[in-house]
Length: 281
Ligand code: ADP
Image 1: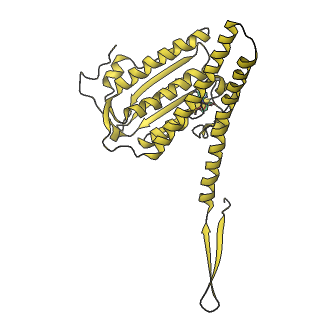
Image 2: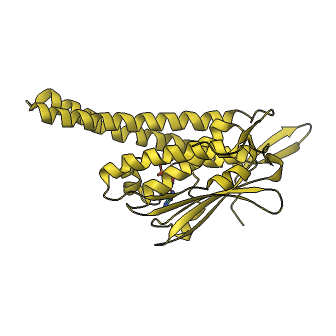
Image 3: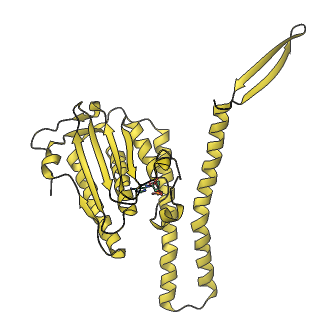
């Protein structure tokens, strides 16, 4: 039993009559507390890079630096600015998602196209990460046959793309060099479809799993910062999926890896026109 907060008012009316009005304001107070937390989190997330940035500006203003040193400082400053840009973009995405209903005339899109686009981006990200890491990730995507038979899915393509690529980017960012990432698309018996991203990364302690989609929730703050995360990725994924009637399930084991899987209801899945769905190179 959770504590309930009541707002009680006593009104006098008529001759000596009194009316006691009690309102349950628990939910209201909770919403207010969440809003306060959110504002505090956003402020904190912006303040950190801003402080770093201001520090570098001061150094550049006050110290006579060699050209290559100046360059290094400017690169670091650009990194902080980029971090703030990502944060603001993610915040805007979240507020857009919350504020608007999914348009009812959802477009049907080829699953093969959606997945090919994700694959191309993932390979690009892998190349970028490999510049810093010794060995690239092993990336496995569905083969041409699976893609050809995957058919179509209904929804807002930009949103679904952003959800899928967020899951993929997380898998790549948290899985150390040389690790393996398997992406799959499966049609289930009941007509629904399942997209999944499995990685051989560090895994997540089961006690944290239920909180991952909360805004700004991170299992390991410092590591997440290193990997360039805003802490909003999975919150965005959750919102997108909710709007599409899809479900996110997270299966993870510490030290072994994680699987993030999305199940779309049968009503949003249909077989593609034959021939059309064949993957493009
Ligand atoms: P972030 O920007 O911190 O990655 P997310 O909302 O995308 O924010 O993810 C929330 C947290 O979930 C991360 O900070 C990380 O601790 C954990 N997480 C997400 N994906 C993975 C993964 N594939 N492997 C391990 N941990 C993960």
